[in-house]
Length: 272
Length: 337
Image 1 (cartoon, rainbow over the protein chains, first blue to last red):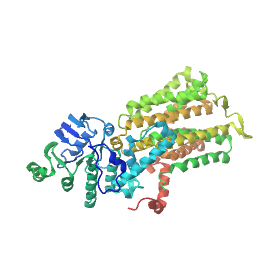
Image 2 (cartoon, one colour):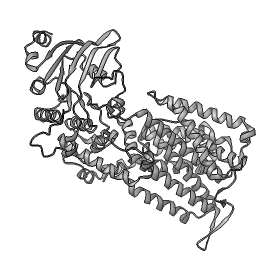
Image 3 (spheres, one colour):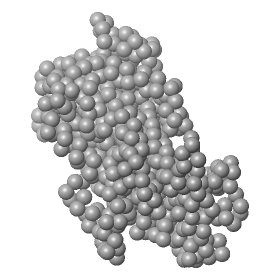
Image 4 (cartoon, one colour):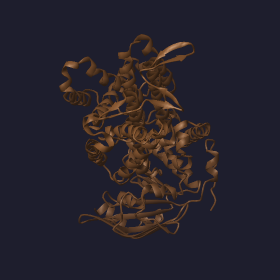
């Protein structure tokens, strides 16, 4: 599948158009318990390449645990995770990044000791020459590649709507902008699959609307997007598929329309 | 205009000018001797600061790496008749290997296990230097040949003709130490400004963020630990050639604590801060010669007071204060929110 350039988008970075096609993800009988609590239990689902896939569920349903299992921050007790058909369960996050997986965090993970641009430049890590001697002696080739990297990072900041913070220190940025900064950093890795953990949490309605457009544009470029989200309006508006978790198990799965009318889902959300 | 991080390019010329002014203002063998030692130790802590200030790891055995460099040079030039340059490179390679072997398993773990491991390593090395008298001269110490490059010998007891001027050996050594310090700073700043440095700063900012974008954090911690050990080893070698005589005193735990105190006092993560820290802390015993026995207590007190009243260290705290006194100018350089 080839990347589709988004329409009417003047700030779209040119190189983005040539990015790799989205990755597909399969989760097979995945389980993880903390003490006696089954955070994720025998969970199986499939995420189609290039789709926007939402994971929803009441608080404590195991959504973030699922993300941490997929992205290598937790080790699963049982089960398999396949990225483009290759088993990746238990693989360290830095190795998964090489395979095109990237993510953002529910509680921000931004380097507050660096500027906004540097945070995004960090995301380019795997795409840069990291020659040790060149770094020690400040070779011209390294300076040029750093300059290009900085430009790229600025483009990405504009792309996610952080154009006001091109010169800002991360510690001086408001919450909503930091959320978008995390997305820019994740995009800088040129991911095939991007996992967004509650990207709209704490955003006002205007920011949420901007986020909605941003996620659609990211998916338009061929990146598979998985998001955990509580904002049902956002989820129903942009998702191709919705997975509903409750107590670590799959409660329902399907298109937003199917899920909305599923009696189990209605019971879980309303009946408590 | 970012005062919190003294900008990297102008910092180096300023340091060079200060280094040039020292012998003009204090042209005296005694002061030059102190200045030379301060410069060599400052270069050592610039390396240690890469580890502490950027990788967030603490080494309590850096004096041992310094001593290994010193003894490596002393033994290879003295006992085995090597010339100084290959000797100090060989000692540095040995120290790098040792640091790599110790750091590799330890830095895979989360937490401050490196401090424990380096503490143990430092003590072992100190004991070996003390006990293996046939090689190291034991507690009595060992003499070291003067430094020389391609037959040109640099000794504090000689005089040299440079461009028709007579330059004392002390001044020549001071010049060498100054150049070494400038080189140490230049390389450290290059590293910090590179993708490697960014990855290291990210380890301190958010290790998990660094990992999910593909930074192999344990690899970079190990790399910077080895680099900082090599800094110590090289400066130890020069120190040995300079003083002409070394004792196991160099490898003591107290000396390691002194190096860490300098970094904390000057400002973790601030290259120029730790140089100021080195100047202050090494001048202190000169000013308080009567209190020599209380030196360790003094270091402890400085460490405690710094941690309580200015945890970021001297230079970052001072530049922070400056920033607050010009809030308008600084804010206008940022974005309008």
